[in-house]
Image 1 (cartoon, rainbow, N blue to C red):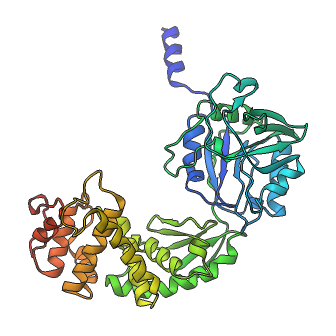
Image 2: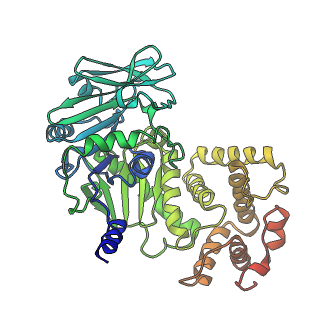
Length: 457
């Protein structure tokens, strides 16, 4: 009986995790580093957290793996960040830096050069060959540059011209690993787990040399600085503070227009926080928090892209708690276009017409292709959505969209199980006091009044 009990306990017990990793998104935000790198290479072997705050202030005492990118030139690795990385290495931590040389300055380059590594613009040429423990493994490579290393470094992967693409060296009690970005996945949806058969194990083997206490909860570190603009909490760190005031100024310009277009306030509890992201690559919304890329579209020199982006991300807080079916993203951008129109920005109309032209190349009169189909192309979905909104505004407005938002708030009670396109057309019908199901079907939308429990107009 004792043997059986021991066997059962062994089946259900697991060794405590030996790796606490941090993927840094403070020097350069990417969706890939926001959890996707971890899921591709470390899931099941480590507990990961993201650092959204100033890297100089990140507590690394119970961390043994730090993952960094080359950074963005607008936010250099400041001296405080560099010293924190060095202290981490001295204490036994492992640092992975994924970067390539470019025509412009790469922020991490001065740190690397101090330790004998130089990012070059020489393109690495395949096939690649692993050395040592990687010698018998297949090495996949997208594209990137070779790296020059001094003799203190141990090459791990070479290109066909015997130039290093990945190498490591000891720094203090820790390990510094530097490799071309092309060795690792990059897609925001983590659908390209290249080299996952060796990357994770390589990192875990080295990181585990520094002991961590798995009993201490490993937490995400948020941006540590904030200010309030009315009820809105603006969050930023030392590097993004320089962008905060101008972005907030745009938000305050945009908000009254969104109120006018939708005819309602944001859904209760929404838009309480605005996070400044160190990127020009867009933003995201959780409803409560909208996150805005600090230099999106060339901001602050170019203003319309930021107007559209803030309107888009804020717009998601108007549609909740029932996200729009089919056109949840298009309706958010259409709101941004409308705001731009109201602000007299010619780029808004140009954006609308450009998308409509793309859609008409696929469906000239918007009557043939079903935008709800699984294989519906993005340009069709977006253009047909815009066409619907414009047509309804022209026939029942201006102000039709406001009637829709008002009616949606009125008829959709709390706790409803989903919101379908059939429900959506029913709400539109109630908003304009006309049965719109035939009109939507004339544009190939697969909608049916029998599939919704909402009343008729």
